[in-house]
Length: 443
Ligand SMILES: [Zn+2]
View 1 (cartoon, rainbow, N blue to C red):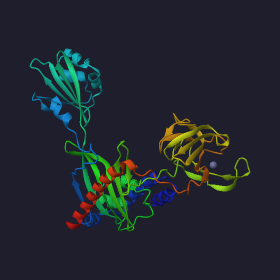
View 2 (tube, rainbow, N blue to C red):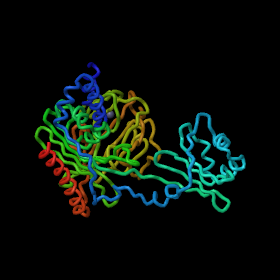
View 3 (cartoon, rainbow, N blue to C red):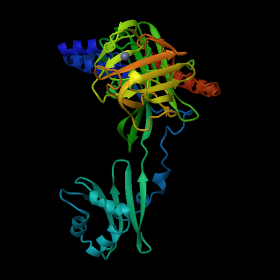
View 4 (cartoon, protein in one colour):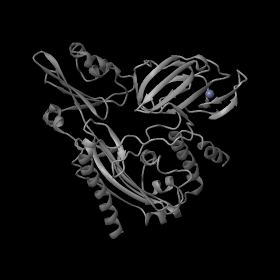
């Protein structure tokens, strides 16, 4: 229990992503003490799931393209395949000799190309298939490299021709909904949502809902997400496509939209981004060692000085990440700041990262960086008493408190994408609403 309280307390000062992780930890601790079979029974009455396959037109490539499978010779031929499971200690050579294939056959095959040579890495449990002629000449060999890839060699015109079949998982979409009784985690479990999807849901709304402070009994959510299947078997989940979260009576909606350039992000139905343009924290810190103030005594210079940033104490070498997309306007030494990166974002914002031990690879003036990209590592270069990151946030070149400044939203849907977005968003949200209604009418 002590552990649980600590992580709640610490979470307040943690970067958002960490907060979400902390929630998962807290919730998984909570589940041990609160979960009981009787809750499971009561939950069954309130939670529904409809695994459904939906026609999702606006974003193509959501359905499997199985043209590769049709043209792959192995699946259409009628020869008799001998199936072989690789045993412990097996090599291609021992498999050949056990199957009465001569050393000449092994030599011919193993020297037929790089892929054949790579078969020396086979492991126990791997599956191979053989087709041979009546006089024990190898005609075909196939190797199930993993669940997605099957390799095939066919003997033709005195050589082994290599081909490879790569299966794409089939994407199905699933609807789930739940009402929160104790925690998001418990209600997700009842709705048979995996941790992965629960985390995605929490991250999508992380800027809108405080999942530690604001969740109440009676909050509810519904969502449509992808499930991946291979040969009819579920192998995992994909992305959340649309979600609704009602927190303390306020409805929040999210739709995943992939623009014409292939960039995906979550938006509300009006096309505003659900993300902030900046992350609040540039580093996973242990504590805030100095806050933004207009006057303080400098620890080394012993003069009264304003502190125009926030100091985040963290061990030497902790990665420092750009808080938003932008262009580096300085990556070098800057007096008492030591090794410093300054990034310009959009038109009016700049961020500064000082006292770095060293810069990340490729970080120099003029380079573009992405939000979350590592730009350097925590150090104590310049005037610093110990390892920490000094971080500044400027708007129109005026210093703002990085802990308090109102962060702008990420860019909304571009004007040119508006109608395409609207079409997609309307379709997804009406599907979401349709499922909710059909469950409400037929509980
Ligand atoms: Zn500082």
